[in-house]
Length: 278
Length: 275
Image (spheres, chains in turn yellow, red):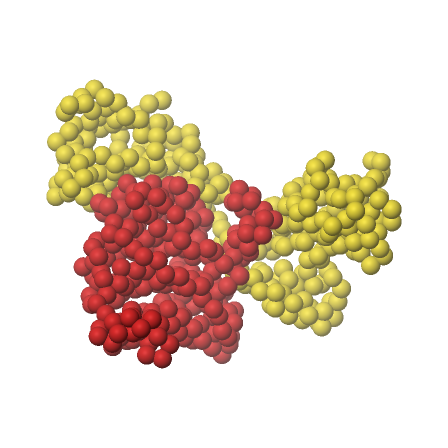
C-alpha cells in the first residue's frame, strides 16, 4: 500500500498509509490528513488512489501545492515524490511492485476487467456488514473484488516456453525472450544484426542492413518475400507471387524459414546473400 | 449484395504465450460485410462464454436481418438509415443474453466482454465498440486508431491527469469502463466513416496493442497488407507473442478491394430527396 511520510524540518512526524480512494489534506479538522498550520488552506489538496496509482490534486489552495519544487495543479504521484505544503513535507512512497509469489495474493493486473464504482461499493458494504468494519476492511474487500474479477492466471514459464520455441541455431534467442515481460514491444536487443548483399542484378554489390522488424523484398505483383527480425533470429516468408523464394537453391515452404549466416536467397530473379554482422 | 468479392477478410486468434485459455472470440460474415471481435473477461472459462455469446448472437441476428433488409435502407418512420439502429439493437440483444446468463448461472457471474463490430455497406463502415478492443485504419500509408478505448486510462489521458507516455507504464491498463454483459443495459459507441479502395482496417484485442507499438503494427500492415492479408494477420499475432504474448491476441483485417455502393430502392430515393 502506498503511504505518505509527513515531516517538518527533516523531522519525521508520522506515516500515513493511503487506504482510502480519496485522502484529503488541509488545515480543517475534517481532513484525513490535518496539518494545523496557517500556510495550509482549509481544504488544501486531495490524493485520489486507484489501485496502485495515486494522483494529487490541488483544491485551489491559497498558497498552492508544490511537488519536487514545482507548483502543480494535478500530479500523477511517483515513488519518492515530495509534496510541500508550507513548511511541511510529505514524501510519497509508492507501493513496491509485489514480488512474484509473495503471499500468493497478487491480483492479475493484466486481465481485462470492468471498473464499476457500484461493485466496489457493494464489496465494501459487504465487508463492513461482515463485521470487518473500518476503512481497512473496505480496502481489503475492494482488492478482493478486483482479484475475483481478475481470475488468477498462472504467469509462469514465459522464459521457458520462449526458449523452447527458439531454434538451436539462434544464439541470442533466450536473452530477449527471457527479458522481463514488462517491456512490451521491446526491440530485439543484443542479437546480431543481419544484412543482405545483392549478388546479381543492376545493384549487385549493394548492401542492406536489416534493422527494421520487417523488410520486404521483390517486385510487387510478381514475387514478394519478407525478412522478419525476431528474438529467435531472422526469418524469410513468402508473401505473394506464383513462385516462392529460393534459399540455397531450394524453394522454401509456406511457413517462415529461418535464415542462417551466408544463406543465398533468390527472389524475383535476384540473388542475394544473407549474413550476420557482429 | 454479396460483399465477399469487394472485401478481403483475414483473421487470426491465439491464446498468447502465457495464458492457457483463449477468451477472445472473433467472427466474420464476408457476404454481409460484418466482422465482430470480443475479448471476454470473468472467472474460469466465463470470459470465453461471454465473448463467444457476443460474436455468435451478433453475427446470427445480423445475418437474419440482412437477408430481408439493406443497411442503407431508410426507415419509413424515422426517415433515417437503419444500419446504426440494427447494429445497436443486436449489441443490446447480446448484452441481455450475456447479462442474463451471468445472473442465472453462478459459474458465469460477473462475466463480460469488450466488443468491436464493423459493418461495411455502401462504401462506408459503421463501427460500434465497447471497452478497450480497437479499430485501426491504414489509408494511403497513414496508420491511425479509429476507436477510443472505454478505459480508465483513456479517461485519465483525456482529462489531462496523465500523459500518453505515462499511460504506457501505468498499472491499470486493463480497467475498462464499459463492457458488454455487465449491466442490464449498455450504450455502445457508434460511428460511421467513408471507406476508400485500398484501405485496410484492423480490429484487435488489447493483447496486440499492449504488446506491439502502433508504429510497428502500421509498418507491418503497410509492408505486407497489400500482398498477403492472411500472412499479415498471422505476423501481427507472432509479433505480440515474440514480445511476450502476455494476453490472448486476436486480429481481424479487412481490406477494401473495390467499391461497394449501395443501390437504393425507389422508396429510399424518394426519402433521400425529401430529407
